Amino acid sequence: MKVKRYPYPALKIFLLMGLIFGNNLLVYGQDAMEDAKVAVSFSEENGIKAITATAVDQEGVPIEELELYFYVKRTFSLLPIGDFFNSTDENGMVVVEFPNDLPGDDAKANVTIVVKIKESDLYNDLTLETTKNWGIPISLDPLKEKRSLWASSANAPFSLITGVSIMIIGIWYIIFYIFFKLYKISKIRTRI
Image (tube, rainbow, N blue to C red; front, side, top):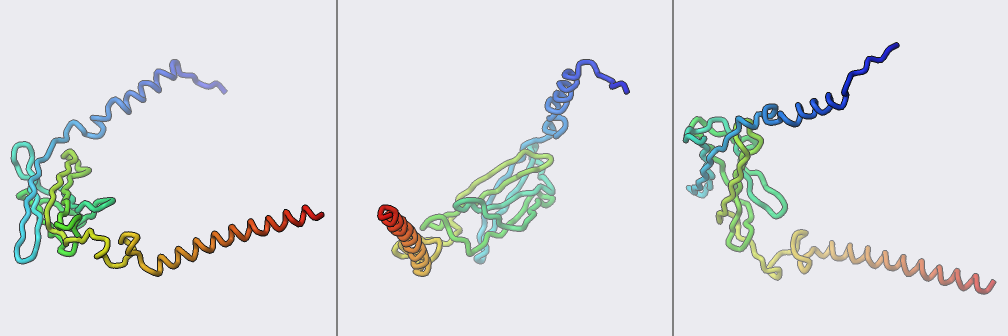
């Protein structure tokens, strides 16, 4: 059986790699993406706090059915607020209600609200951050905190302190017991 050999196999691999990597702008449609302009406003009526975002394109035409994501910045990540999918209406607007029971980042009840466009087919990713004092004020004084798991070490729950202390004492007891037994074994060997 004859094996058919192709001339210049490295050239074919090079051309294939050039086709894959060189044309990624055409494959992924990056040349058609444009920037959207998003304006965020805040309103508070009858105890209901609302975030309104308006999206328009470069010509000022409202963008319909654009997915906007609303978050509140927390210590380690972003907390989503609003519906799972928040898409703009025919006027390019979307309104999201802000939760009233969210603790703030400091004693002034400031929270950082983040509005994002991400993974859109037509528009580039965009992130807007705004600080607003809509949270619940928190006390940063460790002496005034209640005992809880997230409190400082001075205000840890007694059961947690007791449990950890017993485990540490137990581990050190086992270590000293092993050294004591090894010492007794070494004394027995010296007598023999």
